[in-house]
Image 1 (spheres, one colour):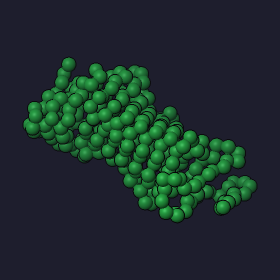
Image 2: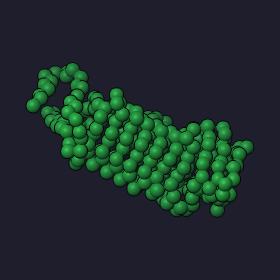
Image 3: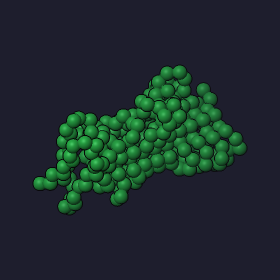
Image 4: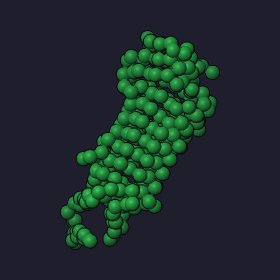
Length: 256
């Protein structure tokens, strides 16, 4: 295998694109404006635990259904791209988590599975052009910027599962098939979940704290939304439901 190795404590300054089938070591790689392309051909082939700096893309391709048992460390600058490689859908499992700047997930229905790993990342974009991305957030604890769809693909999806997620930006779900599972989501002040469907947000035990839920898409003729304070919430803040003017009939808000 073509493994890129960085010696303990060493600093490597890239003078061009680095292409490999995995990184090893614990030094510093200064990519500058050069791209890194890592083709994961075997499970756990990428074990790098050092630091990456870059203003360009850091691309991890899953050549098949693959698992990374070590935490994936991308640059805080540039974008970490998680992509499928080949002519069929793939699943890339980041079992130990992800730390990087912005994230883009796409290519032939690539599924990225966070499993039990924790993510500390910037903005997440799912899909690019006609390429589709699917994100499963697993059971970990995640700190993210915003979440949104990219491109024109029609089968992009996000599954919140049982994760605990803190978002400093908006979670925009238009164009994303969504299942909130039993996730706990903490929104920063003034931020919103936008465009969720009634069925997904009313799933089995999902909880949303702070922020707002806007443009909730009704999937039944007479949907019922229940909002209330849970036992883990404190204070006496009021929830707000924002509804567009109905095209016909009446829209009523009931407070008890």
